[in-house]
Amino acid sequence: MIFTPKQLNKSQMDKLSNPLFLLVLLIFINSKIQVIQGDDEFIKKTCNNTQYSDLCISSLKSYPLSSNSDLKGLAIIMVNVAMVNASETYAYLSSQLQVISSNISSNNRDTNMKKVYQLCASLYSYANESLNSTLQDLSLEDYDYATIEVMGASDYSNSCHNAFNRYHGMDYPMVLKVREDGFKHICAVILGIVDQLYSIDNHS
Image (cartoon, rainbow, N blue to C red; front, side):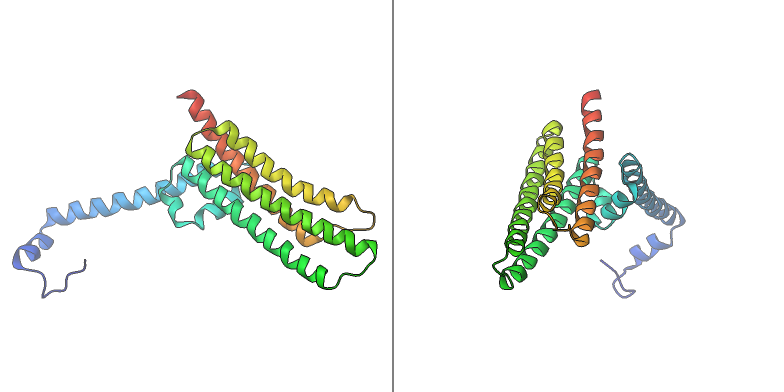
């Protein structure tokens, strides 16, 4: 609450003019600033122990709650980042599938392309389910299963890539390659943080 001069009584004014009170207030404010700086350092330290530290830092800093999160909290945030990423790729594949379906002809190439896009959309949906299971594993502190689920999610994106390779003359779109790499990098960051949780759990 902010007080205007009319709202402050004489006792409050005397307190604000007291040098000792001002010193205590200054120490309190400074300690809050140090806590925020410490949280930033914690994020940096955590991310430096992952494969893609810059991606880790930028992703975590985009979430306001990360500044007050412990290591498990940072892992949960990164899982949510991955789920958003997978959902966006699923939405992209679904929109492309609609375009393909509306322009499909009777030739094998168009039929095969529709099959591949349907498969890839399903695979990214499965990836999201795996990541949702990861959240449950983290809440139970079951880091072995969390690792398995994240690795599985990453593999689903790789399976999409492989689906294109199965058909002769069907190139893997660059936009999907970029999305796949981004998703895999996020999963690698999650695995790096979960590995840190696993190490702490085994040494406690």
